[in-house]
Length: 84
Image: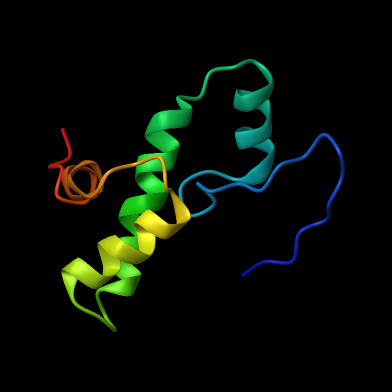
């Protein structure tokens, strides 16, 4: 991970492997980001990382602990969603 400086206007860039922090913050500033799509992207990345160490069901259960407002089947649909 790259060291990042924390400030009140800057937020952590969950898309750092796709776009740099300045672009992310500018898009966020102008409300041009889809928060749900970013959440789903993060969930897919977490699932992919967790699957190296545990079963699919365990990984989805762990993700559900982090996102308790999402049901098991919802997370399953997110992680198995085919990119368009």
